[in-house]
Amino acid sequence: MQKKNNSSLESFLILIILIICQNTSFSKDMILDQLKNPNLTIQSQEWNFVTDQVMGGVSVGNFSVDEIEGFRCYRMTGEVSTKNKGGFIQIRARLNPEIYSKDYKGIYIKVYGNNNNYNLHLRTGLTLAPWQYYGFTFFSRKNWTEIRAPFNEFQKSNYYQPKSIIGQNIKSVGLVAGFNDFKADICLGEIGFY
Image (cartoon, one colour):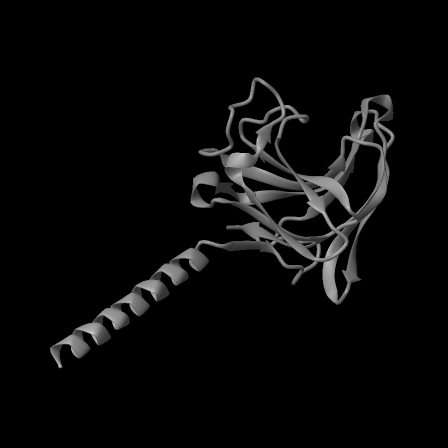
């Protein structure tokens, strides 16, 4: 009888520990945008569309709210051109309040692309020049996919930035099509931190 009670107690304790660990891991996730209020993040920050024309480039595109395979999304399309020292289009949102990178492991996105490489760009208080960022490149398939981008895999864009984004406050996030000549077409259905 004693063995049976100990076994039941051990099973119960293991179940409680698993539930606590599971709830702890999920409680740290933060959804930034699921398009419940299109064009605004949950922080009420607007998404902006930017091209390399701000620095003399010739890339063109647009940004709209669309629906792909039953999911509402931000759709960014355009022609990316590296002519005239250009090469990008992007949608970007400020973070207010800023996100402390040590509070999360990384950023996640749910995207539908056109079988091309795209980038996530994060800016901090230490990326002072417009061309500075921390970047993560991913391949976006022609179906809905969740991409997880750990902060420790983001690369700095310039040698005079701190090597890692970890320990910094993130002030903006951008979804970027760039750095090659190609036709961009990507949909962002959800974005957040994990």
